[in-house]
Amino acid sequence: MSHASIRLILWSLPRLGACAVGLCSGLVSAAASAAEEPAPDAVAAHDAPDAAPHPQTSPKGSTQSPWDYSGEIGVPKLASDDFKLVGGGEVGYHKETWGIAAELAFASYATSSDQAFNSTSRNSFGIDGEWALSEPHAPTQLSLQGELKYASYATVYIPIDPNAGDLLSEFSGMSRLSALLGVERQVDPMFALLGAVGVGFQNESYSASSDSGIEASTSGSARFLGRVGADYALMPGTVSLRLRSELSYASVTRTQFAVNTDDLAAAPTPESFKLIEANNRLFGDLEMASFAGIVPSVFVGLDVFAMTGDAGSTSTLIPLAGVGLSNW
Image (cartoon, rainbow, N blue to C red; front, side, top):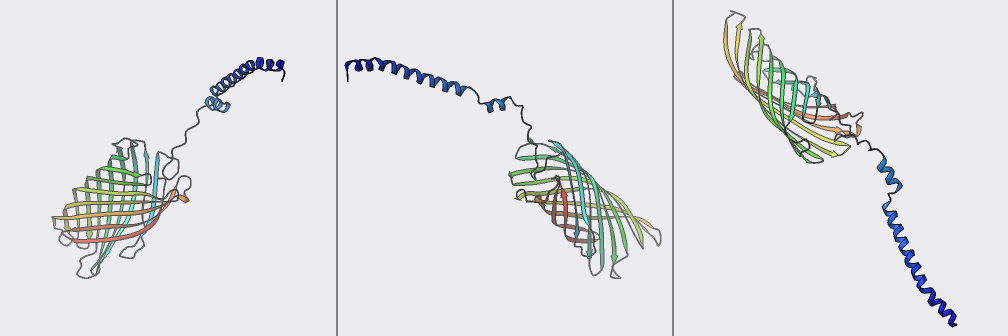
């Protein structure tokens, strides 16, 4: 290699190094500028208006409405083997911290023995109110509940044995006012427990008639209530279970005004009895068959009716099954 070529290479190296350094600096600066500039999609997303929030949904997947409604109808297995229907319905409105509902219900009881047969029809209607005592999204919710209801019991006593007394028809109408403290615990997203205890006052208007006389009375007494329940998403979005049980107890003393049809003699007669009622239902909510926010259900149940007192005692267990609809 000639001396001229060597001198040309030595002269070019510093200039090539300077050019390389300048090119690297330029690439770094360009990369930094590109990183600082937002991408077109990001600019479009930033400039676009906020998207509408997703609607709130209930655990069953329907759009949450402030209106609640449910209904059920079933067939009980009575001791008399008579065909009867039991059921009821409820329509309510709720906000985040309070709710109110109107309800009605009807049921039938029957007992039989070697001496007599009893058949009772029970009808009730009323309004319920609830006020939350806890934060809306707390896992444990406390509430104050109030009820104003009217229940009627129409009973026919049919003697089978000649010594079992007269044919008797009686009617009891009870106005009831109750207050309860309720609690609901969301154990996990699939399981919740409910309960309530309370006390109330009831006023009874009673009348009875038979071949031998008529009776009438009014009386007041305390009434005690307890409720338990559970919700379980057995197969989320397909089938869920609901358990509801209610127990009530009252001790009633009637001062009956009796008139004997033979001599028209009238005399007040005190009579005391204890009344126990229990209603138990296990619902299977068929969420996979829901339509327009309405969920069909099937249920089985067991009702208990027991009354003991000065005039004797009677009790019966009533198994039942039926179907229902709700938006809960």
